Amino acid sequence: MRIAAFGLAMVLVLGCDHEDVTDPLPDVIDGSEGFGFRRVMDNGVVNNGFEFNGIRWNGIRWNGIRWNGIRWNGVELNGSTAVLDVAYDSDRGALAGRDEDDERVELAPNDELRAEGDLDDGETVVALETRVSEIEPFTGGSHEFQFQRVQTRVLPNGEWQDACQDGAGNPVKAILLKGDWVAPTYDRDTGAGADLATTWACRGAALAKCVEWGYHPEGSYNGTPLTNHHEACTRMVRADYCGDGEHHTENGTPIDIQDSLGINTHEGSWGIEAAWGPNGALCVNQPRKTYWSRSTAIERCSSLPSCDANGNGLHDDVAYWVSHGALFVTRNQPAALLTTPPAPSDSGG
Image (cartoon, rainbow, N blue to C red; front, top):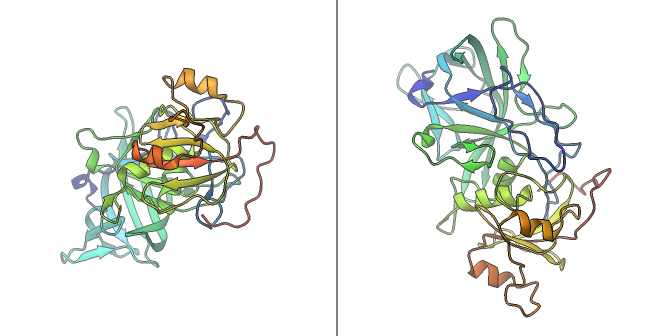
C-alpha cells in the first residue's frame, strides 16, 4: 500500500494516561515515549450517554491515534489482494484504494486490511504492522463512516495491541477522520499539509463521541458544514471553557445539549451552564463541576461574561447566544466530583 502518496502517518505511544482532575489532559498522540499505542483510560465509564435527544454524558478523554508518516512497504486485503494508493475517502469516511487491476477497493464488513511499514524517528527504524478489521458501516446524519477495530504490532514477532481500549482494557473501535488536532490546545490543524493527515478517533472519547452525536467534521446539515460544530462539541464534551485544551469535568457527568441547527435539543429545565463555539465557551454561568468556580473561570478565560448577557435575569436565553454565534448551549446541574460516576440507563448516545 503506497500510503506515501497520501501522507498518512502514525505516531505510536505505549502507556497509560493518568488524568488528574485539575491538570491538562495528557497528549495521547505524543510520540516521545516509544512506539506502540497508548492505552487511554476513562476512569471506568465507557458508555457515551443517554439515547434520547439532548441529555448526554460528557467526559475528559480526548482521543488517541494519528497516522501520517510511516514509510509503507505494502498493504494486503484479506491476505491476498495488494492494495495501492490508499487514501482517506471523504464520501465514505474510511480508507479506499485500488488493486493491481486499477479497480477501486473499499473496506467491507468482513474485510481485514494489513499494512507493513517502517517508522524512522531519525535514530532507529521500527518495522510495524497494522491491521484494520471488524468493519461496521454507519450513516450518521448525512455522512457515512465506519467503526473499525485497529491493532498494531512491532515486527517480526510483537504481540497485537488494540489501538483503542476502554477503562477496563477491553478493545473498542475507532472512527477514521480526516485531519489532525494539535496538542496541547487540541485545535484542528489548518496548516500546510493538514488535509493529508488522518486520525483514528476512539469511541467514547471526544473526537468520536461528537461524530456519533451528529457532528461529523466532514458532514453537513441542511447545507451547513459541521466542521465548526464538531470542534465546538469537543470543547463542550470536555468542559474546555477556555479553549486551551484543559478539561474541567469528569466522566459520567450528564449535560443537556442544544445546538444551533436543531440536531439535538434540550430535554429539561436545568439552568444554562455555558454557550460554546469552536474556541471554547462564549459565556459561562456556574461550571458543571463545583471544584472549578465561576470566579476562576472568569479569571482563567479572559473574563468570560455571564450567560445572562442581557442583564435582565434571562439565564435561559438560548436564542440570544445562538444569535451571537453560539453553536451549542449546555444545561446542567452543577455537582461536586463523584467518587463513583453514575451508571447510564443504556449504552446509547
